[in-house]
Length: 243
Picture 1 (cartoon, helix red, strand yellow):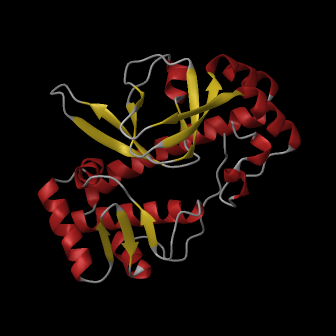
Picture 2: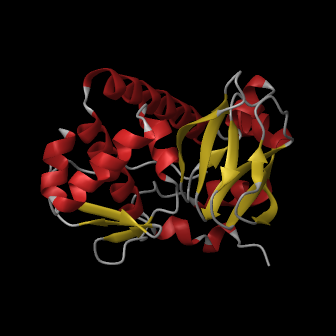
Picture 3: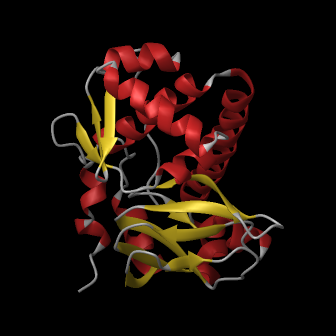
């Protein structure tokens, strides 16, 4: 049975902005149902025009682009609470693909109702704009990182960001979080070779900073990892809207 918006477990997480009763009622009308997919399922294909939009209720995935050579490069990783398909809703087709890395449950929304959100619920429409702006910011930061940080700092920053997202979503068990991706996925997302990535991961492990094996990331020294990543140790997490 589909989860009602009033009972959404993600709403309990302090990382998400609260919704008032009117917004929850609209989201319940906006929601067309739920979709369960197995690991490896392509949720959206680059160049496709999907009639549906999704919010990840649980599970992990990734966004990637296909190159002319046929190879793919990872853009970023998909976590619970992420909204998928906005490009198809606004630009008529996806500019990248989305794949389920684990089994996933997704809230399904009817794209035809997207414009009623802008007309009748400007606060929710602004939330969509916020999400798009943050995605642009993240891509800009990724380009800056690739251009100015060495491989060790890039991987450290990625681990800090992933750890912080997992912590905000209640996915941590102690200092450990699920990270069921391949080393190649991480390397692609950071503009590194697989060999360099493997050597850097070994260095972090030998120095007692972080280990990543068997689908789990274990942060052994978070403050030192932040220093390597050139991030403020005591920064506050940024609250975000939940669609």
